[in-house]
Each structure stands twice: as structure tokens, then as C-alpha cells.
Length: 60
Image 1 (tube, rainbow, N blue to C red):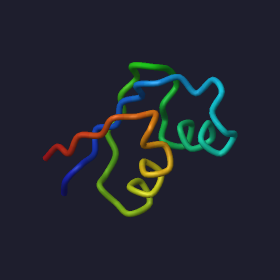
Image 2 (image 1 turned 30 degrees about the vertical axis):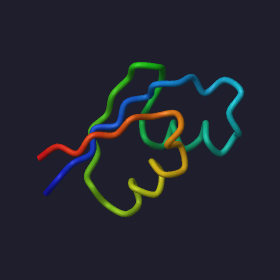
Image 3 (image 1 turned 90 degrees about the horizontal axis):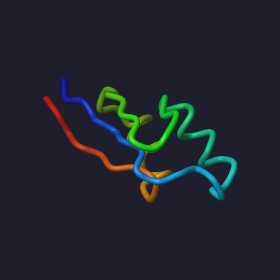
Image 4 (image 1 turned 120 degrees about the vertical axis):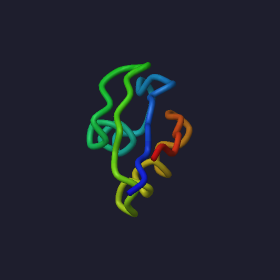
């Protein structure tokens, strides 16, 4: 199954509370931090919510 490589590229300072919580739910802790998640609708939705704070790559 494919995976998503999610990297936080912008700070959560000044972001809405639900965006900060979404970053924490994804496992991102700081700018430059990267996590690999399964490519599932739940994670796609979380990434969509914070798309302005992260970059996403699809990996196999």
C-alpha cells in the first residue's frame, strides 16, 4: 500500500487551534519534522486541513 511522507514546512505559531491539534495528530512536532503515514482517507483529510503548513509526497 502507498504511503504519504508529510513534512511540516511552516510554524504552527499563529495558526488556529484546530490546525495545531491536527499537526499533533499527524505526529508533527516542529518545522522540518517528517512522518510517514498510510495513504488513507483519514490522513488525507488531516493533510488537507493543514495543507498550507506541510508538504506531502507519495511514496511506495
